[in-house]
Image (cartoon, rainbow, N blue to C red; front, side, top):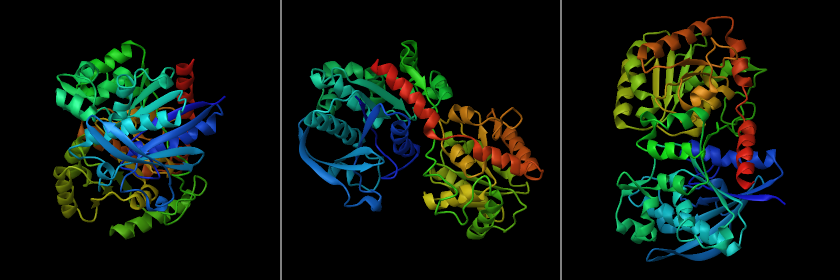
Length: 479
């Protein structure tokens, strides 16, 4: 008999996305059931206003429920949709989720507490015998806390195992600790507050870790890094407690090879694979033309698709950029973020208009054109739990240049080593970063470039390996 796994997450491709979490939730369940016949998977998601228009009016309404959240009795419509043999359940409340953005509201804690409770109430109504509940990031953390408090005596969950995955420990769901948030927002007794209390505050990620049987992160190196104060954002004591109990695991993410496929991608000017990389230069020339750069296939073209925030290495880039742009190269950067970095990059674009193009936007179509058109992809992250961009870039034949941290360290090896698939540097020094770029320029001018591009494109970053690791984890839990 197949085991049933329930995922709970706050975003998912192809329905709605703000970052890498959506890619994981859209790919991992499918990869698991394609790898093993032992599991069925269902996925719980909020139903946001920003739902991909391709799915509007395609969901089936299952229930209209009343969800009690403390003193509130809230309307909840639950819809279903099946895609790739995965059953998706969408939690709908017009007040909480019909907003322009996915996150960033004053009442996010209340919104996702409602979502967590609604998932549990639906499972109880359907009498689903869930073998494993797998929650992702702080937005679903209250689901595990509720199972350990309000629903502690529900027999349906007596044998249900619990996994909590940290995709980015920087975002923990931290709020002021008082009886008001415990009883009036969460609806749990103040005696259970110890589960959520950390450093004198409510910390939902800490509560989820406390209530999980296993805590996983999205790369082996990141699992070790977050034991330290440098990376844990003050949560290192809880991380080390989980580690000492043997509950902490790191599994490198993958990417969906159907979703990211240069031979079929409709966003590309010209399609290609590792056997036809001569066609890649056509994408480069069209990208240069689109962005108003000098069309020249003989100048190395670098790219970044990133959030413009400190931990993505923007400070390293800021220090390096004036000297970097003295080199014979072009750089295109796509992303949004801190106004400080946005203003700096636009100022640099004005100073170097023939070498630097900055697009302050979130644009998936343009990102595909950039991956396929550039020669090298830059990712100098100060911290990177896993990183998917270096994998996507590799898939499209853009050689990654990365800083050795987290999942970047686990996925990219320097060409100077055996089985190298990119360029790396390990410090916070802009000189070392520029030195890495100069090495890539040397490669660009050499006869080895096409061989390296082929090697990079054939590096396996599919979900198959990662899915097997998660299956081992699920099997370990169930046994």
